[in-house]
Image 1 (cartoon, rainbow, N blue to C red):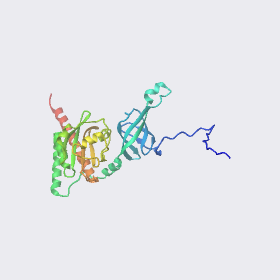
Image 2: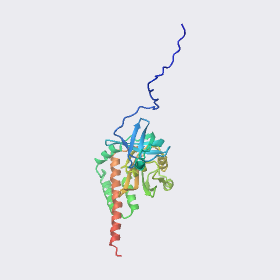
Image 3: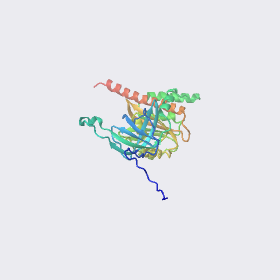
Image 4: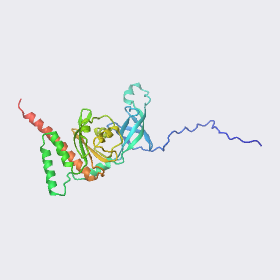
Length: 305
C-alpha cells in the first residue's frame, strides 16, 4: 500500500474566512467617545493596545496626541501615537462633500493616565474651599495674605501671594503665563529650581502636552506626567522626573486660558488636601485678577474726557 500524503482541502463554492490581522482582542465600547478639545471623535474599534477613530479632520502621522475617553461620568486620559490616517470615501452626493468629509485614524496607545480626573473632580467638590492651618499664627498669616490678594492691583503681586499661600505644603510651585501661542514661566518656588532654564523655557500651546489638554477645557490634571518631550523640557527646569506626582490647575478669564499653576510635593504622594488647597488658591488668584480688571475699567470710565 502506497504512502499517503496529506493535502489541504480547499472549500470550493464557499467564501473563505478573511485573514485576521488583529493581534489583540477587540474591546466593545459602544458608549465611549473621545474628545481632545471640542471635537467629537467616534471610536470605530478598540483593543488594549490602540484604537481606530473617525474624526472630522486629519491627524499628523507619527505625532503624539492626548485623548480623553469619557463614559458615564468617568474619564481616562491617554497619550496616543498616530500610526495611519486616511480619508473616508467621498459621499455619492458631491454637494455634501464639505459637510461629510471625515478621516479614519489608527492610534497606538503610548501612555495611560491611571487616575480619573472626573473622580478627582468629584472629590474636590466635597472639599472645603478654605484650608486653615492648626496653628493660630498660620491662620492669621493666611488670612492676611488673602486680604492682600483681594486688594492687590498688580498681577505680579497677586502671583507672589499665590505662591506664598501654597509654599508651606509643596516642594515645587511654578506659575506659567500664556503669551500668544507660547507658555512662559512667570514665577516659581522650590529648592532645586534652575532660574536660567525657567527663563528660557518656551513651550508651544499646540504641541502635545498637559497644557494642550487644559487649553481645550480640562478642569485640572493630577498624577504623573506622560512621557512627552514638552514635559521633559519642563521637568529639566528643576531636575524633576516622570515618577513624581504633580497637579496642574488652569487660570481662566472669561473662558480664556491665561495661566497654569504647577505643584508637586517632591517624592510624596499628593493627597486630597493638597488638591483642595490648590483649587482654593487658584480660585482666589483668578478672582484677584478679575477684580483688577474691573477696577481698571471703572477708573477709565470715571475719568473725564
